[in-house]
Length: 171
Picture 1 (cartoon, rainbow, N blue to C red):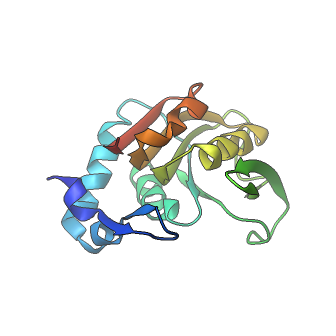
Picture 2 (cartoon, rainbow, N blue to C red; picture 1 turned 135 degrees about the horizontal axis):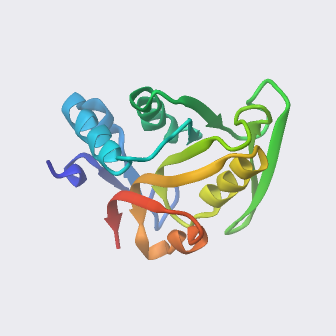
Picture 3 (cartoon, rainbow, N blue to C red; picture 1 turned 90 degrees about the horizontal axis):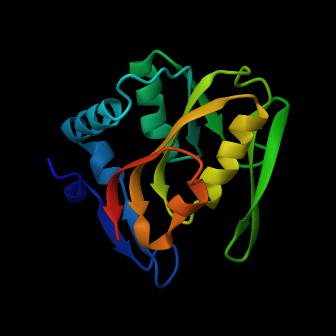
């Protein structure tokens, strides 16, 4: 199965010059979703995972499926003000300004093995900020995985201290 057939490219979204990778066609097809989860699982063979961290919001889709298959807990990382309990915060640089992510301070116990998952690896800022949040909680990052990697943006370079796996690469 060629997963790229299930990724719709939307030109000039969310702004002119961007070619958005829309994963909703993949999510609409149960066989494509199962195939995707199986590919992710194959890349995790032999790894112990206690928690799966998904990044708001498209990272939640496969992160929850992976957590269930791995018999692991699911942890959401969200934008400020979306989590109801005490949080750790991490601010990171964007092309024009900054953004912040949060995780519940008690989401991960010291020494727990963590899989980070998001739908797209672009510049790497969001993923790196999430890695820092996981480590603030005491978690050990086993792997960072992504459905789509926009290789031309070189986000992998920001994650050079972590194992990174992507199913699809757009160079």
